[in-house]
Length: 341
Image (cartoon, rainbow, N blue to C red; front, side, top):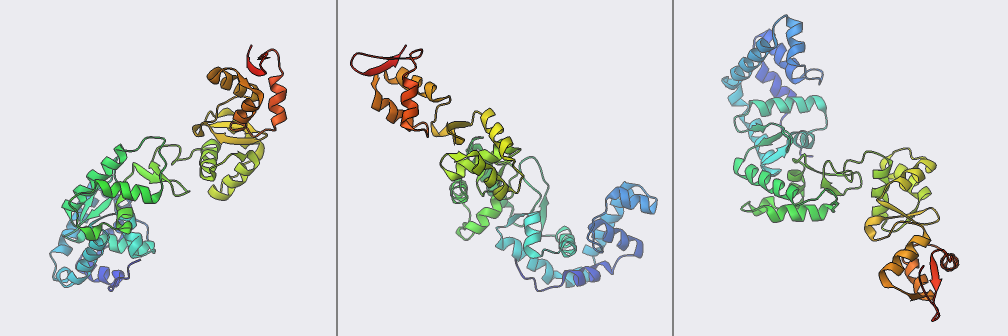
């Protein structure tokens, strides 16, 4: 958090002093300068018995009156300080990020927001499908950041989950002709935070915002992230516990088990143990695994079959041998090898 040298509320009071009483009151309500709640044009219009368009006109008149006043000129140091803060954050920064960087107090944030609207050097770029509301003091840098974020998004697939270090590295690789002083981890993270299309999940992994790996929507998505982070098969009871611990979501053990069974992203590889199918595990019971191995590799001796199945399933060797003895599916050859019936 940056410590500012001026007192936002005192600066606001001085700036607002040039306005007529009703105009000042409307601006105070519109920007939430008294109670922290920003009033809508409709709400203010109803309170004064005027149209929302008339409220907008009064707001614009108030802002222009302040900008033309002598007091506005006297408060130049406050606006310069805000400009320096935005520059230090990369020249372009998401509105919420900027305000929370200056202060955590909502009411004080509203006063700072008013200064941003008033200041000639600040340009607010509105939220769209790709980017959040953001404030800019360097349009050239902002354009390069936007282009790099678009390229970063295009490089990601819906299944991608990458670490913070990797997302920063990849983003910076697309960023060209920008001052080296901006190319640091903190500024890069702030620039990436401008994007609405690239976000991170609660585990700190980055990807496409609408992907279920990022915007987890239920037990199955939470389970996928938990098992993926663990890196090895997990028992469904442990998956349920980890969901509650990592996401703060209530996960009933039985429900967790049932959801994992239904989703092709998971493979039951042992008694209650689940792995991710993306790890290369084949689906099915032990008999199915043996059949797949024999289809792929042809006749094999018993021990080799056991060894291969144990790479796919967490079971006892004897379980595999018992399945091999099912004459409906497998046949023992004269040389001791096994093949499919």
